[in-house]
Length: 388
Image: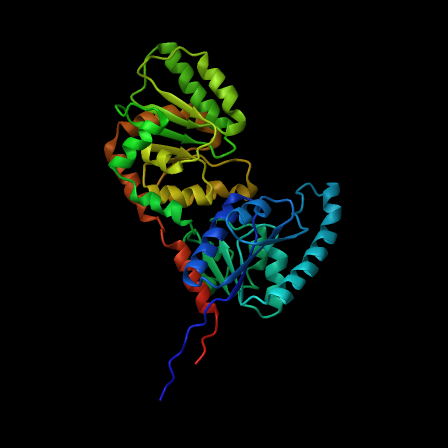
């Protein structure tokens, strides 16, 4: 008589990586889902000393240890590169000590400097290893680790160009539970959102989102729109919710303050938005940078979207992210170099074309992966050998 296989409970998991919110947020979402399924599971994060994960991860309720590691400067003459071999050796040694002491069942890398040494040492010890790759163009750390790990959880399709196809599972990018609730936006919430930002609710809203640090080109585009309104003293058929970035807020507000705009035209400028659910709910059309996690959120929101890839990110990966969506009709792509000239004409054209709005919305919603965190953890469970 055959014995029934029993799944192995997750008891100790290491999650490594970070450097940006785009790495940290999915990592914490994975940890949250593991704790939801296995409340007694011990989860340890490993990050890079001096990077934002050393602050953000403990704020999310998880312990973290740091490695002395950084990337290689692309300017090969940089003196900072002289310390890289020492940092790498130090991190490999410390990663080995962490693994020996913690004894993880699984090690998960989310990209960023720290994931390299940790996953490399874990793979050498025969510990099941996995990568969660957020972007449509993988970072160098994950590309180097590709042949060492058993599983790659992909945020976008098409990663078989860089990773072994038989190890890839397209899960989408994990989002925390408070973000996935964005899907439940309704009419009542929109009224509260409009009131939160001081809009009358009589006109549609374009939400211009430059990220928490702001985007200079997108700010210039909005200021250009405001100057044209002032010049012609004619309001646009929509209002603007403008997230300019905390470092730019004072200058942008002062610039707006010098403009005598028509009374029916509202341009609300904020540096940082702590209630993104309100911003998404208020918006009728959204213009955003094309970070992997922003795209994952926007797919859940399901509003007509313009993507403006940042030109200053590694390997131009935001353009590749945006194209993966625009090629499927889920967004309009505007190069950063063209945003000042094209933002207003594209917004006006889109507000005047309900059919195009509906087409973009349907294609965008079709790419949403609200259960990505659950799917990632399910795949991690499969890496553990079942017992009888």
